[in-house]
Amino acid sequence: MRIFVCAGTIELKNENFNEQARKIGKMLAKGGHTYVQGGRLVGLMGETLKEFCKISNNVEFVIPEFYAKYDIPTLTEFQPKAKITIVKNEAERLQQIITCDKIIVLPGGTGTLEEFVYSNETKRQKEHKAEIILVNYQGFYDAVLRQIENWCKLGYDKNDIINFKIVDSVEDLDL
Image (cartoon, rainbow, N blue to C red):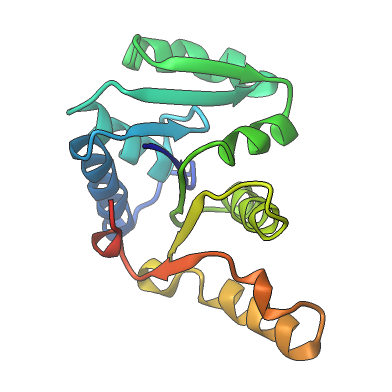
């Protein structure tokens, strides 16, 4: 199964979040899955990748041209057997995400939120059937979930906006 993991690329000092990322990397590798990610070796994305690669080299990177010159040398040195797809821009990368079988969203910033919203909205429009799982570790996404609830309550959206599953930690994932 090809699984895309959306995650932040900023180094965190909160070791609990880093540990969640490492756990998912180990779970993906032990499950024999292909780990697909945006091509970064830092932050939660990097923690997941480093743990995954201790067990498996079945990794795919989808990298926009803008980041390629920065990321590819580091990634190919770290994981020379990885499949690398360079896309023109962020929009093309988002289209690659929804070709995966599952999309798992860990804590992250605006880029992670963009991936989550895009994946959810395109699933709502029946452009793909990937299972989307939001890992709301330590309530990280509580404010986002309240906003979605508020949109529905005020009539700006319908309940069909929710096309994802919510789990509290990576231990709750069914991989």
